[in-house]
Length: 155
Length: 195
Image 1: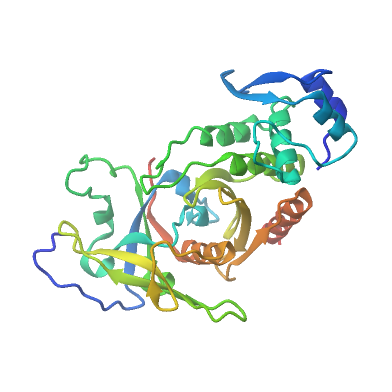
Image 2 (image 1 turned 30 degrees about the vertical axis):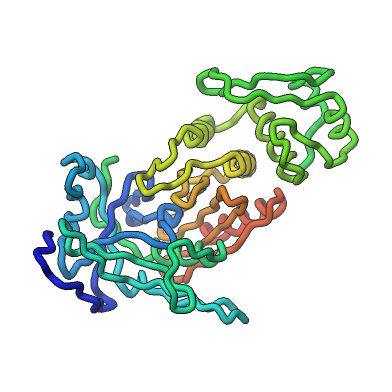
């Protein structure tokens, strides 16, 4: 997990898995006829953090950062989705504005795999970007639809 | 939305005045409402220019009436108390409740969430889950096998809905702030889930 001086790796294959924590409220548990699903209401926008699978195991998202209580995330669940799911280009009808969701490697000293999904507007990043609510909803739903609950949360 | 004037009178008395409303779950007072006689008469007459003293800046008739409905709904006999309790719990969420700086649902989101829940229960289509939105607001989740739908009342004074399953791309749309549009959105979700 430690960075240990390693450089940023900007290359992401579309099939590379990304991992994120989830809580019980974020998912609808499946039964014999269905699988657990992540609710789109639990998907953050415009930016959110993930661990990239190329440099981590799914359970690594449950490891607290330095200074946090050791068991803070122990009862939480894990969701997985691919880089291809997280990436999205969208140009509303008759609009010259183009939105893009990109995945970027942004390592921490205690978590080399740390990455971020960020929203770009016309090629520029702005953390406070304002986007039409319906477009946001569509993206959040796309991500939730492509997510897989790999560990069911206990809390 | 029409409010039965008899209900107003029954709830607020013949002259209006101030009333302290208690939470239905634990009797702690949470809201003081002042509605004067003239306002009651305005509602009697069906006029929409109803100014709620608790929201001096809100002149949007649909919002004002919705808020009034929210207050009155606490007087009504309620079906499915478990859903109302889920919704009431969201009122107590602190700021940064998700540790990612999410805001708790505001009055706008909670007011419209109460209206949506009333419609859902009356129409026999209860949600699978009621949760706080990480975008700030209240969300109603519906699932049926691998099909999914939700309606989100956002603090930003918008309501959005979506449907999708594993085979079809998400269909997201904005819901207008009136009960007819909400009913249409609910019908669309129900039809999708039951198809």
